[in-house]
Image (cartoon, rainbow, N blue to C red; front, side):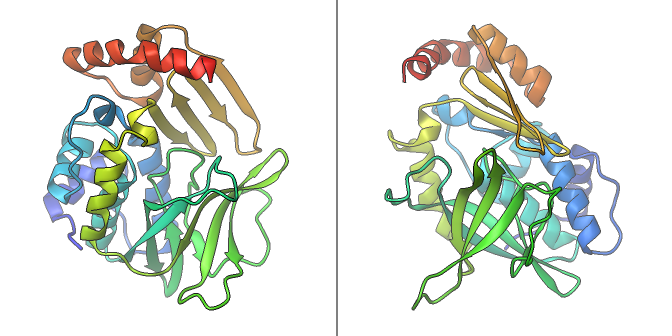
Length: 285
């Protein structure tokens, strides 16, 4: 796994507004996660614009740090893994099957990238690249016995007799109980493993990211999300405030004001042409 050199590590820390950390401990890990989520939004704009998504470290660094853009899991967690490795953390790449808003009887592929990180002789699940609700601190592994009432996420062990690895569900607390976000095991992945997954996610006609603008950003325990013109703010207590944006211009303005994504003129014009049919399709779905 590639790591950032000292110059690029400092540029990454500047991008997320984080001072050079001290020891690679849990407190620093949680601080880095929160800063990354607050400053580098989840977004799939280039997928919608039919621009290629490169997930090698050089391309990811240029897009997310140098050009102050965001990205999705393969980009976000590649960057964080490279930064954590440079800071002295041991990082293992993992893969998950997204279960958010998916019926129990519908299978999903391993299309999501997440990280296992070692800090102070303990293992944690770390993820800054999920477009929906996202834990804003590291999750202990194996899962803690009792859920933290102030933290709306948990890892649940899945019974899977005969499986080579233990299975886990990442879940978020909702108004009606715990909801699955994704399922994963601890089998290590290589960077090359994500190339076909990224190709599918960014190019297949059935991919969600080819058919909807999806943007997200965290602010402490609040999660801001936008799917086409549906803008929502999910609070730590599970409550959600929603607002429907009416025009492409309003969406593009919200991208800049709420998510820190100030697109150049060409990007704004191209996105404005794509948004009306996407907005209409979502209203009639």
